[in-house]
Length: 422
Ligand code: AMP
Image (cartoon, rainbow, N blue to C red; front, top):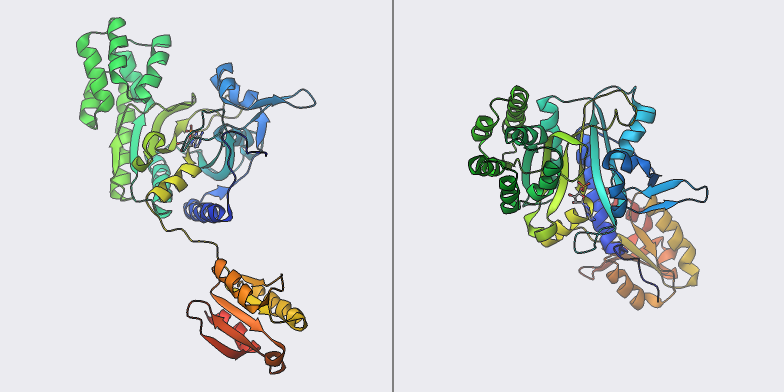
């Protein structure tokens, strides 16, 4: 027996129905904010992903050489591909350029619930805007997407890498030590952070303050800690404006300031944010995003960029955990020819109904009315049409309501108007 490769999944019709439902719903919200969809290839030149992060990232991605000896990688994320695309072909587009995408990503992760080797992201990039209102809109977009798909319990955390960098400068920590600390901060392992800071001769008072500021939602406290750094203070004042728009105009007040958000990818700068679904437990992060710099690295004219990526699979998991009622696959009408004579007419009627957008199936197995009705039930069919030669002589068919079992003889011409009006 063959099995799917480790960390990958097959999706049943039921699961696909859920996924398409969520995708369509997310698309609507992206479009309502003026975003347009794009697509990039599933694999890229490996260098696209190593140029910023270095070769260490190769351990986490699927890389390979093709028959021409080119070094390629299955994309682990979509921001770098989209910016590559932008620099190659879209630089002249009017700004801000708002692009969204759905795409499968591949990471050599250790598989577990909510963590796969092939997974789907829904994301966007906003190119050419860095005003507080543009950032507020970006955050509101993610939040609205997750709200509109039906999630009830999500938490939004907002941080800023320029401010955290200023906090590091204040306690005179940089270079390798900072690199060592960032992942610990991201995982909220503050005791380890404290130990390292003390080892690096940061005073106990400053180390404690640093850790307190990482966790405080109080902007005034943060401001006090970095008050000597004018550019960080300006960043904080912009952050306040973003929060003001979120709360007062987008009506989103369910957020937390959290300076300990660091984000895994190396190219973020300034604003960062994450949305979690606490119902998911360990793998609860649904979305990550923020402002980043990649364009100049890829040879383009420097322009502000920001975006986010939503873990599509985790969104579905969170909805399932919240017992969201998804639409299930269904057939509107199941047509049963009583004998061979009426097969042609059954197909004709099915084609007419399909043109009207009615999901229509015709029995293909000639298994008799009783068994066909059973099958229609298993396909969640709402109506059945039974076509026999006697009824056909009167241009009529038997129309059955599958829920009640009620049947009536009805003219074929009326069937079409019935579905048009319902
Ligand atoms: P990242 O590009 O790492 O910021 O990831 C963005 C989002 O993608 C995360 O918040 C997760 O929801 C989702 N994600 C990341 N890695 C995986 C994975 N291996 N399996 C499933 N979802 C993932």
